[in-house]
Amino acid sequence: MRSPPALLVGVAGLLVGAAVIALLPRKTLFSVPETRDAAADTVAGERWACPMMDFIGNKPGNCPVCGMKMTKVTAGELTREQQRRMDVQLATVTEGPARALIRAYGAVRYDDRTLQVVIPRIGGRVVKRHEAATHMGNMVKAGDPVVDLYSPDAFSAQGELAAAVKLGDPPTIRALTDRFERWNLPNVAQAILKGGGPVDTITIRTPFAGRVVLALEGETDAMAARLPQVGQEVMADSVLLRLVDPDAYMLVVHVPENRARWLRVGQPARLASDDRGELPEVVAAISWVAPDLNLEIRAREVHLHLRDPQRRLLPGSLVNARFEATLTSDFEVADATKPETWGQFALVPKTAVLSTGVRHVVWRVAERQRDGRLRFELARLALGPRIEDEAGNDMYVVRAGLKPGDEVATQGGFLIDSQAQLAGTPSLLFPSGAVAPAVSHQH
Image (tube, rainbow, N blue to C red):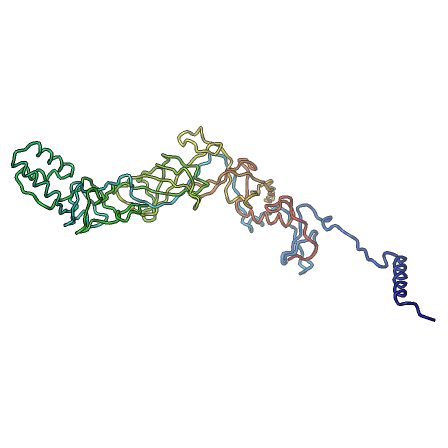
């Protein structure tokens, strides 16, 4: 008798096995554990933490890791001892005008509005330099000699004037005398009229007083950065010297973008330098504000013009300029002389504010208990601009979330917030409360 095919035997075995499994009770094959919600035993705002390990549980007892007794963590509630250990410090929300201090830094330069140039009205070759033309920074008085020029044109004109005088030709004498006036050489013509003879060397004098400078800030003209040299050919109306008022300066500062709208022309400034300290005697005010921002440094350029007769400043000195601005209720610049234009705001110390950059909160005192315990609550804020006073204390203008008289934690706020995260209640990073921790050990 032939045995059945192996395929039929396999199929029959599978069918028999499936029938047996279908007839067995469910609990014989599957163990269904009792499900229990770990958060069922959790009291809102309470957790139990091991003082030694990083274990957080939902109920009291011993730590399953090290066996130590766990301690209760209640969100926002601190005993006197906890306050001392956490060095919790409080401040009261105040109300008043937003008076912002704006700090900016810049370098002093000569005031280019006072620039004067000494030019010859006639060409020639430099044959001698006088003291005024020897060094940058020299002080020059009006009428001081600058250079001596060998000038064939001047020599020829003197000869013509001498001949006209000899011939007694008044029209020619007047015309030639006017020419020397236009050349700023009236003394040369007077010498001929008094009987002197022509000379081939003339002296160019400065009609202005000031300090000799080469190129001013921002200038790129290479010729402007040179003093006249002996042997140099000088053309008519070319620059020999550049002079500035030594007591007049310009300060260029850059104000950060978040403060740039708080500046106005005419706004006074207080100055200080690294080497001189405070400079209360130097009076300075804003004379120009750039209409746009510098995109590279995100700042607005501001010019101040000032005078320093005592010359405590040097060109290139780094100067700190401080401006004060009082804001209106819509955060525009108010008239500092009219208090009725000042806005009134709730002000909170910057140290009290915890921020993610988008969300801002503080921990506010909700209750003081007789035994010294403090209960804090989380207050979400809508903030206005940050302002700073002369002492460097930063404050935030509060648009919503706090009112004057509220007490807030200015130190220890992060620890209070961490406690709230451990307890699963709302905190800075978890607006709706943290997820309940697992009952097992966590790392």
